[in-house]
Image 1: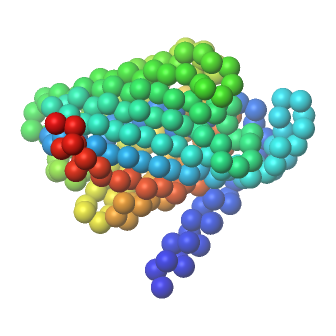
Image 2 (image 1 turned 180 degrees about the vertical axis):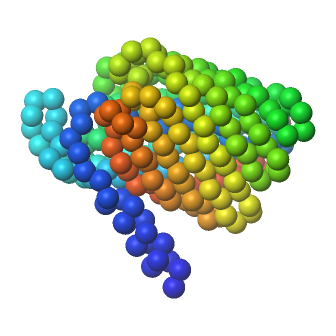
Length: 244
């Protein structure tokens, strides 16, 4: 009974949008995770579906209305506040034209420090390049405060800097905020990035166990598109013992 409902919600979320913007990108900056003082290894695979009416390439040729991309992230948290992520984003599965970057790959390094029992601060930097298309160096830096009243919930807010090659406009400073809530079976994550650039917009995901579904909402004048998301986040921490 539950699975048909979930399936219909996913399909509805994936088919709500249309557009024809030329400059597009999303999922380019990883939001902070719920801080955990335990060492962990996590793998995430996500599919993003875009429906863009009359999409065209730079030569004006029609390239199909539907596009499916994959995002993959490997996250290693040391348990002492240091967190390392290797991300490969916007990997084309089918169609084209929804993103201006394909197979953009980044290393994201952050350090979380405790200010008090409920407040934390995080500084991070994300750098990489595009392996399909024009290879330019992409840089984003961020700093945030995290309010974490319980192990399951945090609220985070701060600012970010992104260079012109990633923003596709100019060097940009903006603000970001969001929250994350997780129980063993259910979770919600939401994040917002301000501005009118390649990063701006919001995303929200609802988790059930290892799986989630959600929606990407573009920022105004960002050139981005609505997208439906489905994904899986798998805890691989048991593998760490083989590297010691």
